[in-house]
Length: 97
Image 1 (cartoon, rainbow, N blue to C red):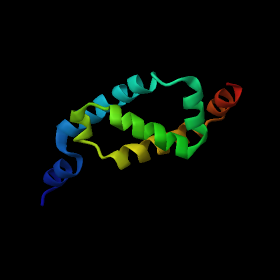
Image 2: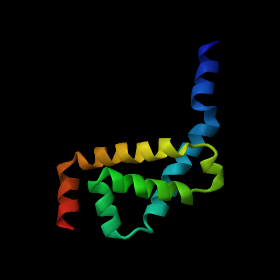
Image 3: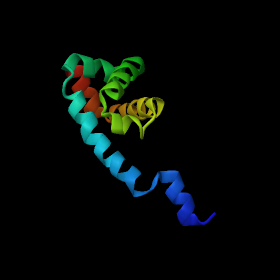
Image 4: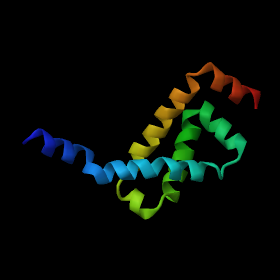
């Protein structure tokens, strides 16, 4: 198998890149519907983040659900939460309320 063929299969090609590019704004739009306390709780607790990530997945358009696995999305959101909370500035924002 050639390199181009492998990369195309591994990434799903250009269509997959486009779907990922559309995923982030869609998730942001969905998360804006949550109150600050829910977001604060999710940023401090992995289980709360998993719950919100599961709800976000349920609200995604069917075209995105068919491209992305539920567990993948949940794990990515938890991993990104950890990246966000590694910054002291963000930790202060969450504690300040």
